Image 1 (spheres, rainbow, N blue to C red):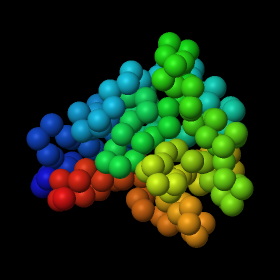
Image 2: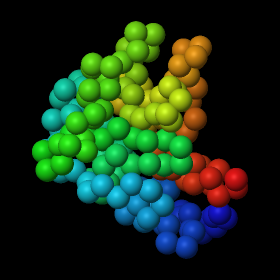
Image 3: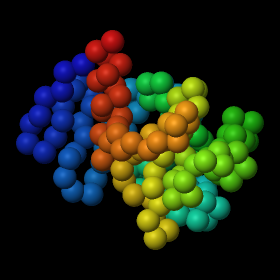
Length: 165
């Protein structure tokens, strides 16, 4: 997939993501996300933040209002529990972080997804707020690596990698 840069925008067929400013057009990205589970309400996001003890980045909130439990390449983002769909959202981000967290996982990480092999996609917590940067926690050696400055860039890079294969 080739991306063109025009001004502050990345253009690719139906994808338009604004680089600068406060508005991110996650709706355009949704077409490239495999899972089409209905997004969650702000109330569900706030309840989840309270249980985790930290506030999600704006891009994550925007994405989850559009689609819950997104699959991005080999990564599956854990769902936010949704009372409208408890059967498909019971194994949510809170359960993954509170009940199932690996004892070797640093306490300043919130796991947001995994790749099915044991590696985890994470945000770091800083003073009760999850930072924008996306990290991988490698389960075999408990190492952490920053892989993207934010969720938007992670999605774009993952889509490009998948198209290059």
